[in-house]
Length: 380
Image (cartoon, rainbow, N blue to C red; front, side):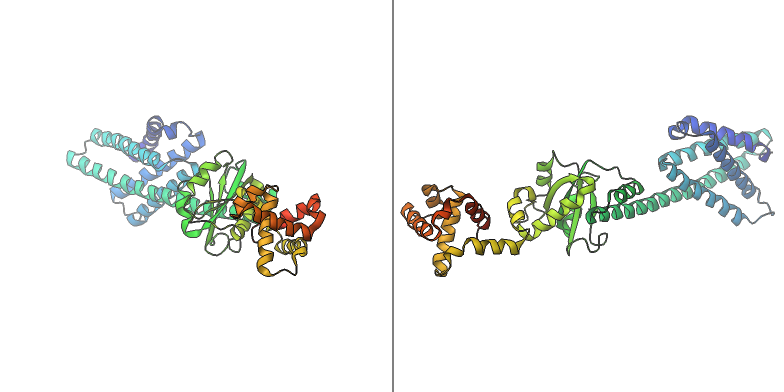
């Protein structure tokens, strides 16, 4: 008798679920409703076989099949985007409707109260087992999906750091379900500081450590690619204080490698003080001058050739004075204050320099060469 009513019970179960659980009522297509109704009917049929204690089939295999079906249902629901709460709510509604329908039928046919109570216990124990299996399937699918997405995100980050072509980057972003921002800002920092830094940054930040970007990162270092930090650069720098971070410039997201390369070069040129964040935008001169160290050294030798033959200490004093004179546009008092010497000392040293350079100190091209050659105090 109960088997004969299964299609009706399944239909009423689906109707109740769609009415009471919004996530099913708002987006359940006709095909999906038909499929779930069939699943409900099969689950109830399996239950009746177990409850009846039929000798036709091994009860263990019947239960295993039902539990496996519930597990796969949980996985399918996770893939569809519905939450575990929605799934468990659907099970609660389904258990209530199934019990009401079957309980009423049992009472109508004169089943004793004791049997009805025992029957109720069986119904809810069975539903509990199925809902637990579905919850496990849902969680497993989410975990697997997250692992896959994490791998795809890592592959995207590697491609960005390596400067892959735009079509490759677009394909990897799509595969990782990652919506590209307008810009990315590369941050290089010790790998031990990566996770504490991520907690205070935009949730869309891409995180790369040496296990995800083999050969692209310095040893014991990590990289962050922070989205759309152009207007909030000052806030980004504050968030990274005391984390020994080097912050590259913002670049269009497909050119993130440019920002990363800038941060890498700054790591070799700029010394961070007490773990302070380094803003590469504040060290552009040093970065430009360090781009070709050998060329800079040749330029220094060429520019300072007139000082050859002097003792090392004298040449050092005159070089220091010449640098200050260039940077202070020849203002003697400013040069004296900078070097902490008497203005007469500056005059004396400049007389020595003019004696060796002559009119070349008035030549703009020579002044440019000297300024570049001496821009970094003490040279590269």
